[in-house]
Structures are given as C-alpha cells and as structure tokens.
Length: 234
Image 1 (cartoon, rainbow, N blue to C red):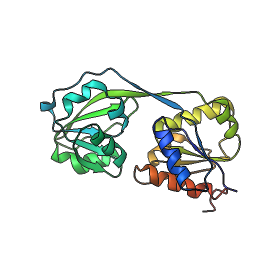
Image 2 (spheres, rainbow, N blue to C red):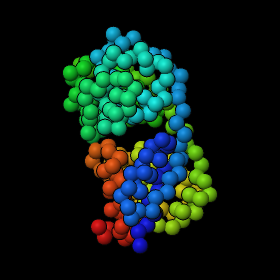
Image 3 (cartoon, rainbow, N blue to C red):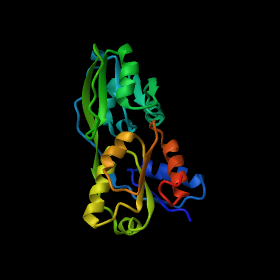
C-alpha cells in the first residue's frame, strides 16, 4: 500500500503541487502550508546601475510590490522555469533560465551581465560572484514559519513522504518534529536539491533529491517513493 505524500510549501505553491501530484494518480496527497509569505519593505534601485536582475524564486514577483515597476527595463536571470514564468507574467523579459543552482547559473551566465541586482527572500543562499561581477541585494519578501496543525502531527506519526522545496522548510520540519516528539525514522524526504537534504539533518528513513529545481520532477520522485514503502528497496 502506498504511503501518503505531504506537501508543506507555502501557498499558492502548495495547491499547485497538490494538483500536479493528484494528476499523477495513485497518490494520496495532503497539503499543509507550514509557511506564510509576507512582503518586506525595500528600497528600489536605479535600473541604470545594473545590467540584469538575478532572481531565484517566483515569490519575488508575487510579493515584490510597487518597487518592481521601476526595474522592468532590466532583463531577468531566473533560476528555474517557475521563476521565469512568474517574471514574464509580471511583465519582465527573461534573458536566461538556469537549470541548477543560483551559484552555478551565476558562473555560467552572469559574466555577460557584470552588474547584477539580486531580488530575494530573507532566507537565501550566500553567493560568490565570479571575478568582475558585482551582486547587490534587496530583500523583498519573507517566509514566516507556522506551527504544525494537529492533523499534520497525527499524520506524521505514521510513515509518510514529505516534499521539501527549501532549506528553510527542511530545518522547520526537523524542529517541529522535535517539538512534537515525532520520530524521523518512519518519514522519508524528497527534496528539491542536495543542499536541502543537508539542511534536514540525519535520522530520516530515506532522503532523496533531484539535480535541478523543478517541481514536476520533484513530485515524480516523490510518487516513486510513495509506491515503495520500504527505504532502500527502489
């Protein structure tokens, strides 16, 4: 019997991932957003000081607010197709879409854009720009953690697969399991990157990740794990 799949990313991503997972059939899907995204006040920048925007999350365009309007003349370097799609929907031109980490994209694409403005959330990966490239930052949103609801606590006391879309989510899940006395061994994690796996810590029944940031690929991995209740048997 397949074990349930639990999605904990914030909305609207949680509902979008649940719809994709249910369309795969044969998966019992539960959604519990453990984060609430909120905008942050930020000082916009003069676009003529930069060659491009560096963006790693669609949340930037959903919660960036009126300050984004002044930057629409700048092309976007987006990490992942979801971010690129959100940029286009917001009226931005996308110059390039990375298929791995932001650091890797920075090394591959940024040399053509020497002055970058990074728009990001409060929780973000530190970057090392290539020689000759500068990266300024503006924090435009924050993901605020929520406590686990009782229904999720009960669900995680039995075997389950949990998808992790960020290192922040991995750390919060681990902390909430400690707070509620939930054993890690029956739980298995499907993560959007190896870095997220590392943030989750040890003691889980199984951890797996995909090599590039794509929600559909992550859910396909999670579905495969759900069909096999025995860690290591895949």
